[in-house]
Amino acid sequence: MPSRDVMPGGGETNLATITELTEQLPGVIFQLQRAPDGRMHFPYLAGSGTRLTGIDRRQLAKDARPALARLDDADYPRLMAAIERSARWMTPITTKFRLRLAGGRHSWIAVRAQPRRVDDAVLWHGMMLDISEQVAEEARLRRLSDTDDLTGLANRRKLIDRLDEEISLSNRHATPLSLMMLDLDHFKSINDTWGHLQGDQVLRDLGELCRDTLREEDLVARLGGEEFALLLPLTPIRHCQALAQRLCERIAAHDFGLGSGNVTVSIGIAEHRIGEARDTLIARADQSLYAAKNGGRNRVMNSNGA
Image (cartoon, rainbow, N blue to C red):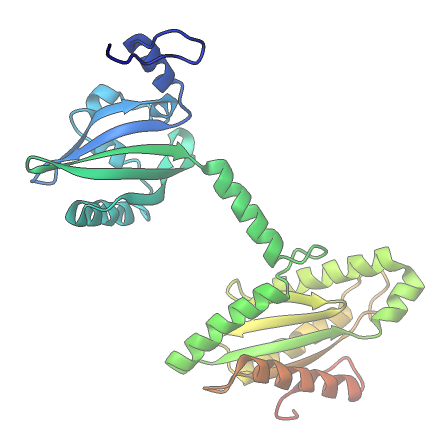
């Protein structure tokens, strides 16, 4: 006797049951066909995700362009390239893209599809899933791994990653790059006199003051304790010196809740030399910082001793 499909509860499957099941799937199962002239359409679409775009699936059965028009502009060429590679080499499509929704919202969509040739056309069978929550969670975890908990600034890990990128660009294009190392003077006495909660607030306010003073493309990072680093791309040492001096004076004049003049910083600066290793640049900026500390604090020193 021919075999019959059976539901887990013992009942036989039928077309209505299968249709109901597919429409409840948390995503989309689809067929996408591309004709020899490049035109594409969806012969089959099912699943709750078909309601995301608000486009009638009967329209998409004739022409896929209304759906493709909803792709984020940055993702459209990448998806088209993935489709082209898959059609040429008969390899699966495995990618993700952003889909524009009503109200200016976006959803992240993951797609997996297997191609096969049908006469002169290519037909893909695949699935699409909304992975917006997963992408948001990954971004949150990435921010946590790159962010200092207390100040919200970049942490040491983020600084090192960005410093490596900027050093590579400086080496390749011979562009200037400067680094500041900044340390709060007598921070222990602030904690001892005013308490650790007030000390933490001073660190947060100092980070904000640094961010307000620098450009958007610059990076402010807290390295730990009362030590900060400021990375300035496309900035030669003379401009970095002037900015560091202005920052030093601005901090000394700022009232951190302890009275003006009770919070000062020492700053050491260094400019990247073409071909110089990252750790060497950091060491030179650190040496400048120690020189500023030993020179009486509340001052700026650069790697040339100025």
